[in-house]
Length: 191
Image 1 (tube, one colour):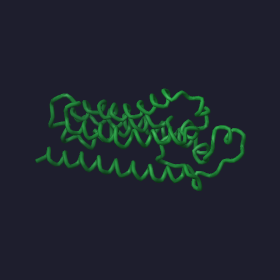
Image 2 (cartoon, one colour):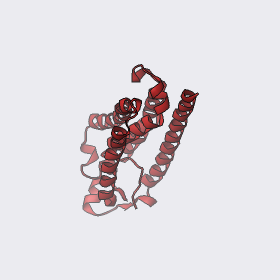
Image 3 (spheres, rainbow, N blue to C red):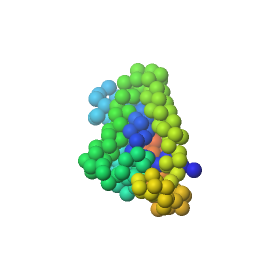
């Protein structure tokens, strides 16, 4: 069993891109109403707040505390410079905001095709990657333990498993709050 929503760094930018585009779709009525620059609209502020206060900490948690797992045991996390970790976490945050920004023009012109593509394509790639990496994601240990086939434990009985549950809960609450805020703005725009 592997965590469906946990965020290994390899898949976080793809999932962020898809989530950002989906949030733009949710905010469509408000985005259509506003002509100005995307960066000055309320939905952008809500999505940027979600990215900074929820998405980045969740992605960063796995890189900082479970680095070997987050890198899918492909590289020893201790050998990865911290600047690379930071850059990849920031890329994941930028992908979420970027997905929102890329979807705004098609949302405003009521073209659903590009928005659907922005949601489905990266989400499908991430889902394929998660399925292919299921064995690696279902194990908690270090790079050496994973490759030496010793000392690993199933994710469900590990500290990593508890972290996945907590971070998934926080992520779900954050997404729920963000969607609720965007829907409230959409309802105001319809009046």
